[in-house]
Length: 120
Image (tube, rainbow, N blue to C red):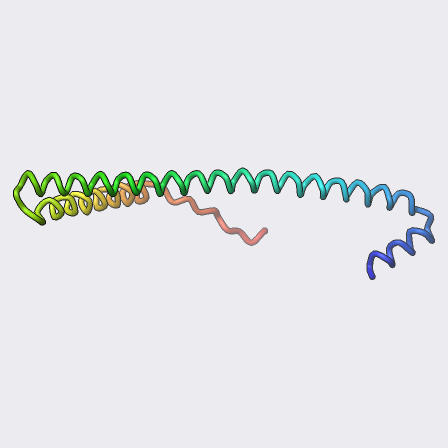
């Protein structure tokens, strides 16, 4: 409805040619913008897929490595559960260490707050 009113006003004022040129330029700009956004979205999706696949494969490899270590410790210690217990303690200690390191890094970062003003 609004577009029809603008077209009628432009025809009455004699600037229909200019309006058509602007409409064509805007249409081309929108088409170019859409094509660029689709290309960037495709690159981001590929990167996320690659990261997820890498994370999954690394997790599976680490899981089997720790399972093998637990069975090896069981055979070495002549126990059916002590190797699993030692590996689980090691994993929990690694998680605690990572959490403490990340926590100390986050606490050492200076707080940056923007000054809020009322515009006067």
